[in-house]
Amino acid sequence: MSLAKSLICRECSRTYDLAALYFCDWCFGPLEVTYDYETIAAGITREGIADGPPTLWRYSELLPVDSGDAVDLGAGLTPLTRADRLAREIGLGEVWVKNDTLNPTNSFKDRPVTVALTKAVELGLSTVACASTGNLANSVAAHAAHAGLRSHVFVPGDIEPSKIVATAALGNVVRVDGSYDDVNRLCSQLVDEYPWGIVNVNLRPYYAEGSKTIAFETVEQLGWRLPDHVVVPVASGALLTKIAKGFEELIRVGLVDDTNNVRISGAQAAGCSPVATAFEEGADDIRPQKPSTIAKSLAIGDPADGLYALDVVRKSGGVVASVSDIEIIEAISLLAATEGILTEPAGGVTVATLVKLAREGVISRDERVVVYVTGHGLKTPEVIPVAPRPPIRASVDGFNETYGTEV
Ligand SMILES: *Cc1c(COP(=O)(O)O)cnc(C)c1O
Ligand SMILES: [Zn+2]
Image 1 (cartoon, rainbow, N blue to C red):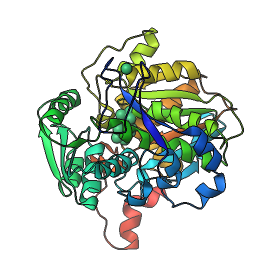
Image 2: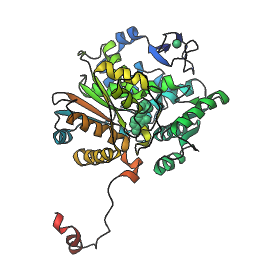
Image 3: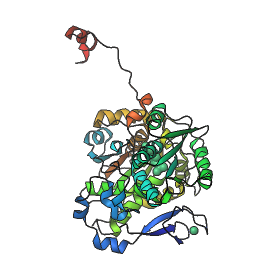
Image 4: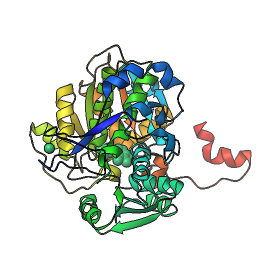
């Protein structure tokens, strides 16, 4: 049984039933899920979690749906890898990479989607949809197919071809002439037209809850210790705000003893950096931007959770920084060469931001740092900075002619 209690308005704290609602009737603020934390605290244990499934459903007490009927392709419990070679290269002490490229559809989006579609089934919906920069579409189409739901996934016309191909094999991909922000606006209109569960519109409170499991896993995999500093990619800002909620909830239900403040830093591409710009200017509002970057999965010019993300970062003592496309590509190569992990540009944004913050002394050597690498490099082969050399003759001589000087 889920111990979710109600939806609560993030602005005025009015509460609502756990239905397909996403904004407050009273003040139009966004809604989020709240739980009966006392009952959870009385029952939840580290051992109980360790005995649970090897997926994010091991934390079902802190999720807003019943796990018995989960729409589950195995999302979550991805590796947390100690990255000593990367750390040495950039002058840091203890760095960990949370490798969320290894989710069922190779991005962190499988976390929110498994939760959102489980809620869709619980609500009796037969069709689901989403507004996506690419990875969400892939994940919604896959989970919908698995659950026997119809899906329509909406993406900007210019996303990476390989992402469209992977998704079109699974469901109906609707390419829209426009940016993500146009796609999102369209989906906010379609939700009034059709009886759909649009995962990041009317199912958004449930969807967003799935993201916090990456924080739960981080802490469990560190031996139930909090990190000192985390670096998080920012598109809408939902992942960043939910990571903060995840750490808070673990403290609240008594699963961690240390209550040290976790510094939370955000990472954006310079070509789409509305939150980083507001941070740098010390502004209290976010000016929308028109994205132009290779980090297309982070290309949201008008981020729904941007202000909340800004607030979380400021309160935690972190920063939001941005990096150029060249730095993103260099960081993809650096992560591949030092740790053997191939990421799409979003992970390049995060690692490049880590490098930058290390160089500027914002992150210090004595901090235990976790970086979130959220999408697989094979999703965007066009940006991988290597060109294969021509084949050689199948002989030792053939090898020596071309590569002899390199061995
Ligand atoms: C969607 C996405 C994010 C961040 O998403 P938010 O909208 O900020 O929650 C990060 N990395 C990848 C690869 C993504 O697809
Ligand atoms: Zn309200």
